[in-house]
Amino acid sequence: MTLKENNKITDQAWNRLYNRLDEEGLLEVRTSDKRPVLRSATFKWVASIAVICICIASVSVIQNRKSAQIYNQILSNGGDAPTLVSTLEDGSVVYLANHTSLQYPDHFPKDRRQVFLQGDAFFDISKNKEKPFIIDTEQTMIEVLGTAFNVKSKDESFSLSVQRGEVKITSKKDGKFVYVKAGETALFQSDKLQTMQTIDAGQFGAYLRKVQFKDERLADIVHVININSGSSVLQVAPGLEDRLLTVTFSDDTPYSMAKLICMALDLKLTQKEDTIIISE
Image (cartoon, rainbow, N blue to C red; front, side):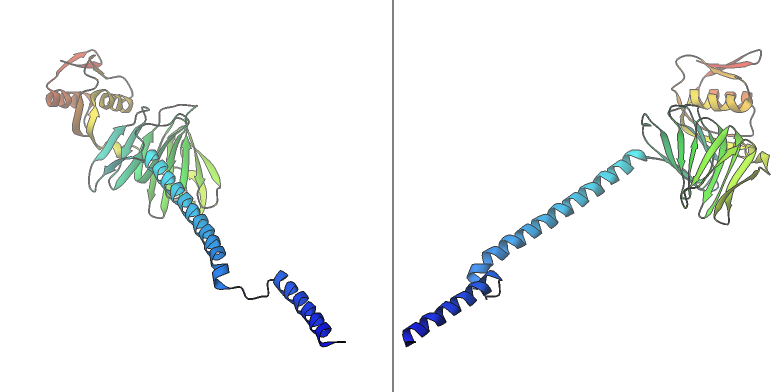
């Protein structure tokens, strides 16, 4: 074999080896050739990460906006203050004890009436079968249609006593629930919701010993007085329902409360048999 033929065979072998190494990506590639590919890949990864971050941020903003839309009003009662009484837009009446706050929306959506409670309160819920009333606390979700009950939810303690109607309580910890009927109390025992007979039935009246209204409609104040007196004792003349009043009552009779209202708003009080009429 001549030297020329030998060199030709050697070249062919080297070419086959080179092509195989090239196909398997084992050859060193020049920086100038690889750099555009790396830049393109890097750009795609950066773009993908940026899109993911934007999506996460958008979801977070949407969730925060939804939370803000659900609870964007706060009713708060400070320390050593009388019971703060307020009527919500659905007609439900809330009695807040001291050191208690209630968060609620400007307007309830069509499917539910939901609020968030921290502290001790008594609720007299307006009945609406198509729109359940939901109270969100740190430990539970409370669902009612129309009933009266008090809730004590402070720190780790929780209890609920029903005056009338029925209430469903669901534990946030394990998802288990109980139904509480009139005359019963629910509380946590060994981290589980338990029901028992209400021991102190007079606890409901404690909210009414000294009450205050802050910028409440006159019609709503009179409604609260009437539902707690057991009859329509007070009446408001047409045109006065939306007058706003801030007032405090302490173990007063319906008549004395009507007299205070008339003095504060410069109105007239007349009585016909068992009915007290507030008018211009």
